[in-house]
Image 1 (cartoon, helix red, strand yellow):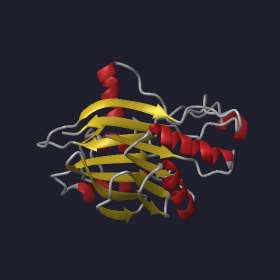
Image 2 (tube, rainbow, N blue to C red; image 1 turned 90 degrees about the vertical axis):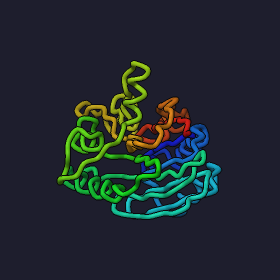
Image 3 (cartoon, rainbow, N blue to C red; image 1 turned 120 degrees about the vertical axis):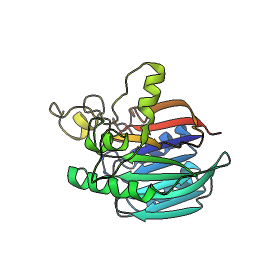
Length: 248
């Protein structure tokens, strides 16, 4: 099973050719479920689903969230800065949560992520995956909260950052998903950015399933890093993240 997340950059830069790049990256990634952020409107959402080969899809206009799936969406819910759906994968019920937290307020990010976690507290018999653009660094309060390193608003969470898990298995570093030095948005569309540091804002998290069995993590990787000769741009200003797992 493969799950992916990808902020596709709602901007006119490189369009309409860049839209084809986005579709090509989605097709190449070949995820069973992909969580998209910054999808402009429902028309673009439908085009992404149809061209990507996804029969099942759900769109939330408030933050431009799109969930594309190859398996039926058994149930769906929208909420502030997020959406969730239930699916069945390898015989197990899974809940997929797609988020795009506000970029301009740490207070809002903390409040919203706690509200999402509280919605998930009663789920005991499902695998829960939380994916998206968190607009938060890996040393942020949001990340520490989700990975059980601190509480927020008297609430606890216990998720695993699957990129961290995979890096621990392989002994490597975790690449940035928002790369101000190598992504040509900076230098082509906007001036070179020498101030902001590269960040890993895009995560795929899995809630601790104990006492249920853990899936086996096979791979975690970036996609969307290729630069088009036609546009001079990568498909997005963010790189996507995908994880491959075996669910038992």
